[in-house]
Image (cartoon, rainbow over all chains, first blue to last red; front, top):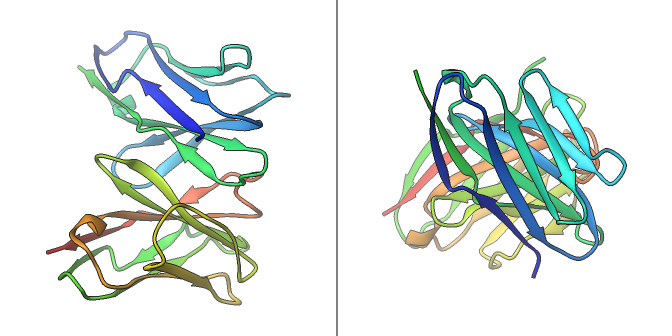
Length: 111
Length: 114
């Protein structure tokens, strides 16, 4: 069965620190990996990574896909309190057409 | 433009009852997907509708069903409610199928089954 695992489950850091969140997947026929940020209710889209686009960056956030290790990292530099949220990783597999989510990483930024 | 809207936002039902949740996608979006989110299982895919047709279904019992109307609005129905159905139900819309297009999530409906 296709599986997506995120680590750590939770993380508490001080404002200004840099954090790295991990997402690994056990799949056949990988198609794409997505990162979402969920603050209160609705997850908001951050990045989509595919075999043809393995690195994305937006401001202080960046993400890399490691096809060999079947994993991805989400990096946040110079963290701010507004970065506190649950970060979700989801993977789409060829032949499945649905998003399989990991359980998320709860990130808390202390002022 | 207006985002994805879901109604109702909160709902309390008792075991054995049925419930219908509604989702209005962003204008122009033709795909609507439904997800169940619980603390223990995380976000789990229920189903996706595109052009009024169910395109994909997750591993949920037949008590969970849905439909999509010609204006792309979607409803999800859960019959014979169980305590374990208590969850946040999220819908997401996209211009095309979710595997190829960015999804925009609604605020969710919090269902509590007592």
